[in-house]
View 1: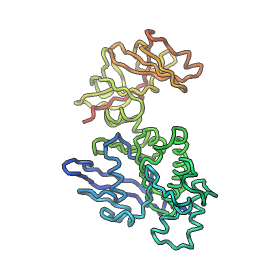
View 2: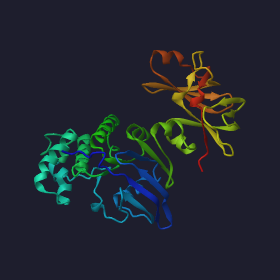
View 3: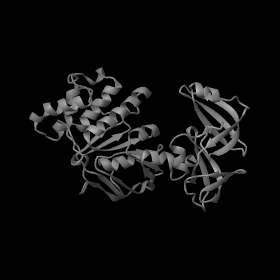
View 4: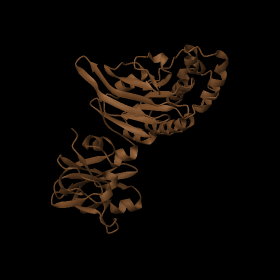
Length: 363
């Protein structure tokens, strides 16, 4: 049976890691603590350093300076096969000439684990990824989702304390990718292993992770829970990168108020002075002001410039009286359709102080 008890899991620690490729610095003073049994996603745009960071953990990249610890063991210069780490690659890296069973048990052979334990381990791994009975299938006979499950089974069969995943769902279509996100979250709860997951997909990271580490230009910008990242971003980069936020320049008024054009907006959050500030407005946080909005909401007069139907919702583009652009998202149900306006119509939108997020400009 495969069961990594959380009490037996170990955390992983990256301490003051720097990585140079010639004169190019791919990582700058990166420190990250991942607790035992935690699911942490590394999220960032292309070239942000997230794959290099995963390479440090896997042993495929060595830091120019700094250290990597697995529990209380320094693994900075340990080769990949000595780290007891399961890895799921973006392209799955399955052997096409081997059966499903041969692919999954390959790590047992490579680690010279007693052959008499293989059948029980294989059975447990197949059941965990819901591929029981697929032992003799060839890789070319499997769908994309099934291949992804084989790669997962191979990564967990030797009961690693840490599992690394490098964009394993990127090759799947949208519906299958979303289904596999739920499956991975379920599998993590079953396994209890520590998982570090690299992705460029914001929704994927928010869906699966206990915490998300945002990277940009080789640095960690913010490491936080999905909700805090979305609702309390550290700066304009995080606010723009997470969710569907529009950044509108505002001026500092006091610790809980900012000025947008002639309007004074109240926020429940503390505003930091001395920096260029932006109001980060998520489309789904705006409401049509019709007298039913929460008391004390900030009211913003605007003109509708365009509407875009997107199936489950419609996005309404607005021009504020101060000249800034925003967008409002309305559900495509009956109530939402009643609130839709035509281009050129005047509208007032409401933003609750709890949803009035002011962030400093990213350095």
